[in-house]
Length: 212
Image 1 (cartoon, rainbow, N blue to C red):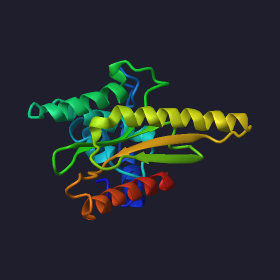
Image 2: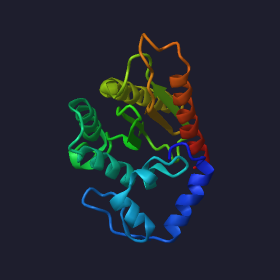
Image 3: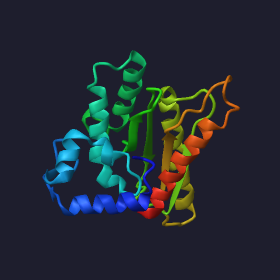
Image 4: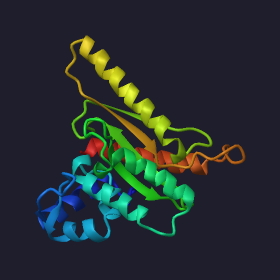
């Protein structure tokens, strides 16, 4: 669903929301839906909303977190899949106990066609930021390097905010860690199929920010 045009995804979500009734926040403070199609999707198929581009990150977060929890509940996961998804949950899942001021927002998560976990997450408010910077990995890197990339994103965000503050700018920034693609390794890095697929996913993510 991440390749649905963001403008179409935005209209789709708006229509579903119009036919749904918001509920009380859950125990982790995440929004819920009491009735309607969004209630059913949140309970049964959160990935259908969680990976849409063109929907506000704050509206998607209950669905992305629910998707992550569903993936972790799958007993058929390999040790590598579970390790990477668990590390992601420790960063973004409110139930993991990370302070809300330090917790990045999960923008999307899924298992790729090769079974590897993919995700994007953001430091800062991508819905209202004046500038969004995206970081992505290079050759032979995947979600196993999540901590390194999120540490870099957090540091970059802090440095940008400090620089803007020193210059008296009220601009707001957000840093997105984009780990939704297979960068390949030494044997296939020269083939364009993998980076082309990653570029298209990234383009849709950025179009989604513009749509919002």
